[in-house]
Image 1 (cartoon, rainbow over the protein chains, first blue to last red):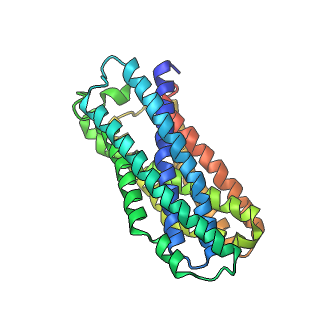
Image 2: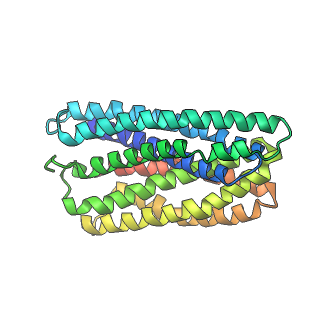
Length: 160
Length: 146
């Protein structure tokens, strides 16, 4: 395996952790939105912590090894339109996902508090777990991630 | 370097394959998290295993189909016959072997709703499959033997 193959493998590994983590977060979040017991919601939202870690590690790997590839290969340039667009989308995805994740964390803390009490269904928790603002932020972040994948495959304007 | 010079007509099949593979990785990752949580927290074991089984049916199986259809589609475009390079062999091995693994996971997932011992096997098998998917994407990107 040469240098290019290693860099590409680590870059793609980052993409799998980033977007795979997004899938995990959506599956667990969707399951949580269908539950009523705070203890069950707390368990599912606690597990999304692993998804958040995977997303963070993945984003770091994609940016580090993606930029390394750009600077290492002669036929890509940091000023190429599709690379600039990917960088903007990467920043957007991270910012929106971070904001959505912060709201999700507050929901998890509420679920854990209620679970430690009488574990009775709560209207406030139900509203929080279906919070349209958090859902919108997470959806926009996820779509930005998918748009990056589209750019990485099509490479519009790269000529190859 | 093939990825750098592939024809435009390969892009959509490749996107379908990669999108399915990422969804499959995320879905199997969810199974691993839920099934190991069930092992560690017996009080919520039944609930976590039920969600894991639901995820297997509604997320993992569809993602597998999308990944496999995309793989066949891009493979037909690449015109690699009759040679069967190592990296394709690894990918096909993990891809086609995945059907057996998913059938076993489905059986264990059904059984673990009543038998916790099956849940332990489910967690272990899901973990092994997650690692196998990592080996597959290593082969697909590094292309050993090409």
